[in-house]
Length: 629
Ligand code: ADP
Image 1 (spheres, rainbow, N blue to C red):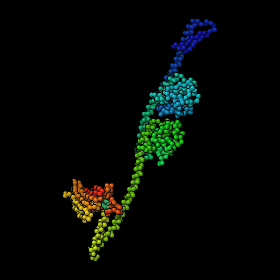
Image 2: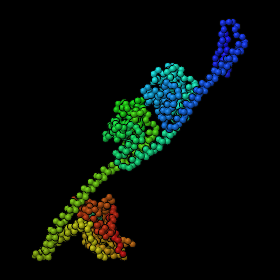
Image 3: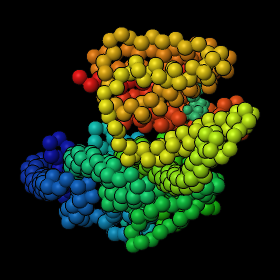
Image 4: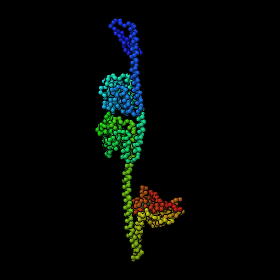
């Protein structure tokens, strides 16, 4: 027999053998002939192999090219993966192909899509990080080529009957953003060439996905800003607490497209959180009242720390009452709405998809919650203010009514008093004049007292009526001298002053301008101020009466060394019927109308009355009247 190697570039690619039933059937010339044939065959085989290789490379190149073109024409993450899936399915004969993606916090892997569809491998299926080839690839960032999955202890079988697997990471920079996983029912179905091809595919996908991510990021930032703007606008356009919440929830719901968004507000007893307006799809409401104890939202309310649950299936913290125990709710985000040290509400979103919330949503929610806290606090204060205003208004109305009743009372009483009083005065005059017979000195003395007192009473009633009619007061102005007015007031009270041990001091400027005023009423003003000065100086002392003028005003002041007026009452003494000591056991008489009248009269003249006082040291009342040049 003769055996010759088929050599191609120094590599044996086969053997050519010739057999004969004779010994020494082949000689050197045969060997040379065969050798020639062998090299010809080798070249032919080589060519075929090269052709196959070229064809394969070409197909691969086409695949990659198509992948590049198609995936580059979309900027949507899901769409990139969907198109890649479609292209790979068309170009390669694959038993199973699955894309897996990590959750935003990198703690879990979820199936994105698979060749055999959702019936075999449901999207959203959680792939264990520590017990799967994809998990291994995700953690190490290195591809895995597994000839026989039965030899790999951490193989995570989803599609039944799978024997070999090739898994490569799709990376952006150094981050694994997706995992491409091909499986076969055959043992040892993938070789190094496949590995290289899929790595090239993964590289291609990485670029497309990164573009999609960047685009999405930009768009998201934009819509995030718009969303926050919208919420703020909605919130700031009203101070109605309920409306603020409602509008915010609507805006959030529209923007985030999650199944449920809502606020949870504590109830009066602080034992439950009550859902406030819950925007949800198909009017589906969810729990409207959840306990604060042992729930996630309750925990957020109590601690002020936000909570983000990527997958409730993986983390059922409070299995009993929590909404995370609802099987439909797969992920959850709850942030506190905090104003100052108080947590006023919890802003919560729930999704039926796992991993619906990430850092972005957390950021949006926190921002919105922060802004809302201010708005809600304003709204709350406003609500309180509204209630207070209503109360005040009620009190004011009551006061108005009391004032009206008082006015009526005063009018009636003064009317009822005036008639009998004038009768008393008349008869007293008659008696005193001796018209009704002679009087003993004692009787005369008594009648004198009756006359004085009646006159005093008549003055009081006159003052009362004058005060009541004040709004309609018409001044009878003539030219008057302030000095004269003051001197007559002093003269009028000289007797009373002497009785009370008071000394008057006059300091009247020589060049006082004349005034244009109502003499009778101004007399009343200064008379009353002087009378008060005497009345409220129980231990005597000096009452100083001054008068002076400047460019615009003419001033008169009455200063005493009496009991003084407490600082916090100063603003009240000009009120009608006000007395610092209004008790029945008060030391000083009066009705509390004198100063009110003084005020009204001076006001009607376009002037002002001010008072300075110190308890125990005395008071000074100053009247300023405009000059009439
Ligand atoms: P009345 O006629 O009761 O004195 P007024 O209107 O004149 O009423 O004064 C109101 C209150 O102001 C008085 O009851 C008194 O408490 C206080 N008051 C007025 N003048 C003086 C003063 N010169 N010194 C101390 N208290 C005064």
